[in-house]
Image 1 (cartoon, rainbow, N blue to C red):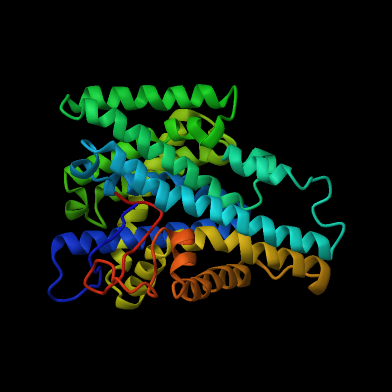
Image 2: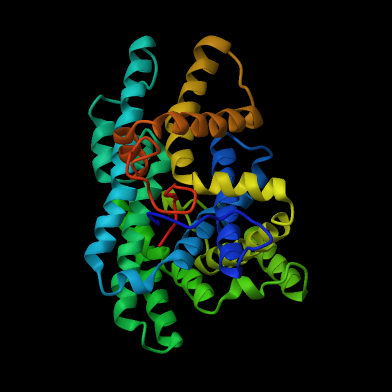
Length: 372
């Protein structure tokens, strides 16, 4: 996760590097939207299940693509300091914010969340993973997972980055298999086992950047058809996938669907980037992916569920829920950015209200879910 990024706006003077970063921001925008529609109850369910096969793997691949080897290989303390600020601090802030909102709603309706004690959600927050639904703001489990994922990846690659790619791949496969095995026995704190499973995805993203693959990807060619066949076949023959609950199905099919689906999503994003409207919208959403992750479920879907049950007595549907959750998150973030302390706690940046301007041509420092 980068503390700052250059302006990603497209234009006639855009460099190839700027264009690649814009596509990556758009990919993040698409992925966080897929996460939101999933939590909003996207129908038909088979479509939501298909998105599950690649939406989190895509986040990990983008994380590997944006990982800065030159910055962190020789400075692990900098990586720890950066990720504590931009992942762990927002995690605890979001978790406590959702707990306060949940406590308020519970006092308003005595039958809200029956069987859940007052202390259990706080214990789940400290443990850092789903904990059978006791983590009230469910999506933020990904923040602890991404934190551990990047630490493991950095420590591993700093010692093997000079070795052959075959050895690197073998070690990443070994780490991923280890995580899979551990997850069948115990859900480790802070999603350590899932972070190990994700190492292969991060490694692929890292190699895509090394080989400047985004510059060479063509939208429509034989590779697109092959990737589409692999993804559809792997998604069809594999069982339900849910990384949060350590449900991977067949591990080979899990990785094939995750990799093929992610590459198809990148290709599709390049096609959408030709539209200035879609490019601008998805880039903006991608740049604010962290706040959307934090607020869409832990504030807006939580409130909507309460209103649907106790006030409206009807389900709004996945599309209105998605619009409200995304737009509400972005609007709330605009307010938070005016208060430097709140901005720091929520996104790891001081916001527009801080007098010392942040880096970047537009005066902003962008914090996203996946970054170097």
